[in-house]
Amino acid sequence: MEKERISNIQLFLHLSGFLFGSTVILSPARGAKNDAWLAILLGGAGGVLLTWVYAALATLNPSKTLVDILREKFGNIAGSIISVLYIWYFIHLTSLVMRDFGEFICTATFPQTPMIVVIGLFAIVLVYVVNSGIEVMGRLGELLVPVIPIVIGIISLSLITTHDFTAFLPILENGMEPVITAAFSFISLPFGETVVFLMLFKHLNKTDKLKKIVIVTAIISVIMGVLVFFRDISVLGSDLVTRATFVPHLVSLLIPGLNVEPLVDINLLIGGGVKISVCIYAAARAVSQVAHIDDYRKLTGAITTFCVVLSLWEYENQIEMFNWAEKVWPYYSIPFQIIIPLLMLLLSLRSGKRKSTAS
Image (cartoon, rainbow, N blue to C red; front, top):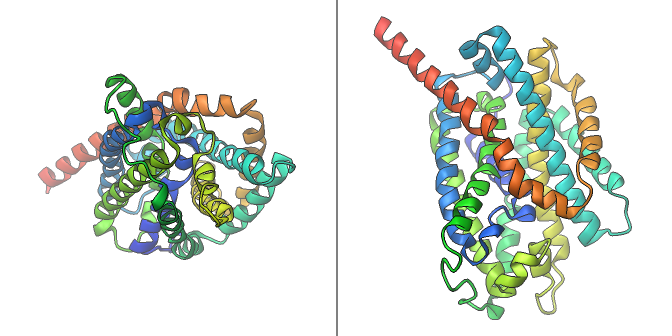
């Protein structure tokens, strides 16, 4: 497992699928209404900077996972305690994404199917993928993730004759406060969640290009987010975009003479599958390091089962799910996504200066 490697393009595609993930379902910038495009740009700028922090941290600590870095910078005991907190964070994130996709599938596609069946079947497939190893995950991402922009392009081109390009006006009708709030949510979801890749970066076969890959991926995700927003708002109008539960699904229904609902489902399942599999891998790998278990695959089944149960238990309904994602999750994630990584980066920079001075 230590010798498993992924290529630059595989990391790029995996990061792209992860950033797409459940973002479209939850639409973290929707609180800014007409000005969501501005929130996406501002939040995207902060997200690019945050992902650069993770890449810089991995570059300064080559061949080390997040658990290794925590133990080295904070000491074995404190580092292990913080690692356990991160394990919880990865598990919690996995359960949230599972519930997001369970809600979507059971609402938009299979309304008569119990959610536990949808999430359970999805989880079984993903456990098999994660147990196959990081190289297989990389190859699957290489095969499936390119479908995402292709589907987005098909839907966008099919709707080109129904656009109202003034639907996002007037600009800043409600001031900057909603934009700033939505931008902060967009930084947290999805960019801050890429902290889980600190458990995967060590497997990159050419780490010299890690920062470039991460930054380019984040910028492309921001551009895609802006384009999708303008497509949706110009087709549906600002009022309907704000009130709609699953905007991509609603947009797909408006294509005349063409049923692309299955494509939307496939798109979201690919993004969600990438995101969940990365989180399961990160959680299992972190537990195996903290508990000194030689093979993370012994833990994936138990961790995934717990995530499935937690995903069914944590929300009462869709409204609660959306409120949690928009109002609670960004602040809940601050220690994991911002404070601790920045502390580790500062300590890594200081250690690097000491080594260069000693030499």
